[in-house]
Image: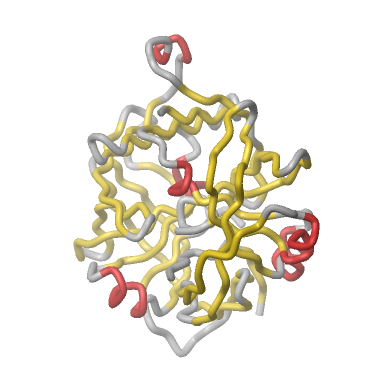
Length: 285
C-alpha cells in the first residue's frame, strides 16, 4: 500500500496526469461556501453535485465506498485508506477535465454535515495551468491564462509570494516575532499549528472545544485558542483562532518541516488570486 499526503480536509466545532477538453482559456466555475469550505458545482459520471476545492490536496478523491483499498493518504488525524478509480470527464462550470486517475473514499459524513450531494474532493493542482481568481462577491472561480497586477490598482490588497510542495501552496506567517512555514488550505475551516510550537506562543487564550471531522470520517475533540495577532507580510490579522495538532507523520511523508495550516476562510477576504506562474498570492479586502 503506497502513501500519499493530504492536509486535514474538513475541520468542524502527489499530482495526477490530466488533459483538458479545450486549450487553456478563460473559464468560470460557480461555487457556494458553507462551513468555511468552497464547494464547486460539478458533474462526474453523469451525476450533478459538488466537489470540495482543496488547496491542501493534489488529487481527485471520489465519494465512493470500496472494499478494494489499495492506497492511502496521510492526514493530520492519521492514515486514511482509499481505493483507486479512473474518470473519463469531470465538468466544472464551462471547464472539462479529461482522463483523470482518481481515488475513492467514503465521504458520507461530509454529506450529512453539509446537507449537500458531495461528489468528491478536488486538489488545486488540476487548475494550476491558470491564474485562479476566487471571487466571493459573485460566488465564482475564474480561470485566466495570465494575471496583470495593474488591474488591482484601485483595490486594497495584500501581496505575498508562495511556493508549491506536494500541490500545497506554502508561505510564511509571523506570530510574536517568529516566522512559521504554513500551508494555505481552502479545505480547512480552522487554522492549525504544530503541537511542538504551543509552548513557544505566549499569548494564547482558550476559547472552546470542537469536534474535528476529517475526510476519513474520524472524529476528535480539540481545543481552540485565540491569538492576539498573526502577520502576513505587513498586514496583521487580529483575534485569530487556531488549534494544535501533531504534524510529525504529515511532515515525514511530505519531506518538509511544516509548522501549520492556514485556513483561507479565516482570512476573511472578498477575493483571492493565486498566480501560479509568478508564485504570487493576492488577498483583496
